[in-house]
Length: 481
Image 1 (cartoon, rainbow, N blue to C red):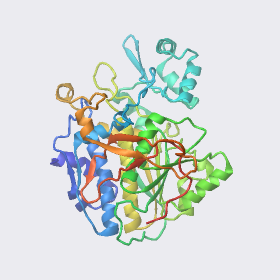
Image 2 (image 1 turned 60 degrees about the vertical axis):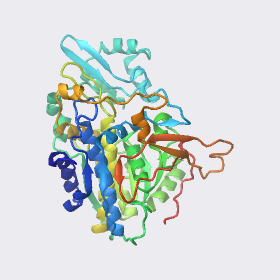
Image 3 (image 1 turned 90 degrees about the vertical axis):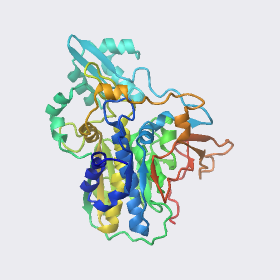
Image 4 (image 1 turned 90 degrees about the horizontal axis):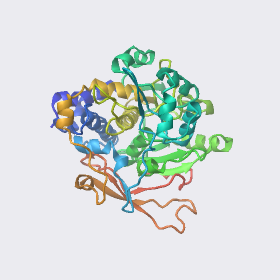
């Protein structure tokens, strides 16, 4: 199994979250997890560490409530494929197509010796149009690249941010380390737990079949990191209610896969009646998970202190792009592109920051739930993509010879599915919604997806069904068991 060095990455985050060291003996990781894929970053270490921490913390919470302890086993290659889970699922035997807009991969523009890279969220319609409005060009790669040549990288980045758009100038590690935001986040852990209120210790009765059974989670997240967190909590048995806005475009190619195990509803929080509905749900929730723009929910009365006052003992988990300190703390952002070679920027083989952040959020929520049992109180969990990126960087890099000579590429997206993907797949049925018209007159679909890589030997992941749409359930909780 894992060497001390490989397990030390999990150990440092586990202990920093205030959890008991003896529990770490139940975490079983792959020996030599890298290169698990052809990347100079230690993706295998990042994947098995974050997924392992999510699983171990769920198992520990189960132990605190039931007295049942268990081992958690994580294979690095399996974890790496789960880090790209949105690539492998099928619906009714078909692979979804159209994951990336043809302009969304990024732009590398040469100014003599200067390389400028912009990562823009062109796969989301509002961001696409916002960027095009700034550039005043047509929506083609050639037109965008020509328009960008008229801009200084940092000037365009700043202008995009002022219009609430996401575009980032490429910086070397050294340049980022000297940037004010890089300095502000330099010593930040990828996850932090903060006590935000007093509450009695959580009671327990020792009769739960799944680690998070009877735990209610409000999931107000979109795109990837937050939804991955909610999906993971659902796999451990939580009642996860995904709340999205009817005013925002859906992302079906991601939503279908990341909503596995959840129930889904929609609330328009610009209307007072729906804010009252959300407030009612929050009063009976155990976890409030959100990834709104910084301050967005506080303006509506759903900040961490607000909910800790209304529901003592709640765990409030938040995800931001750049953290809670520094000049960029209020900026929006998405998973970044990573540098794979010293010559040209090259994207990571998957959205590693998003997935790592999602599993670290799940770990932090589980750790905070453990504290509600052992200490009581209300807790806030904070994760930022910038800090997660810094943490992945801190794991070290592989030489190009090892990374691209020994690393195994991701399997091809083909049908029939590659044997490696097929061997890790689980089949889920479409959930029957509880609204009158949610499945009326429709044949239920089935999907296959990469099963959860954290194997809890006494309480396996619960992967049975998926809603496959964003508004098929009423805005209510299931009865507690």
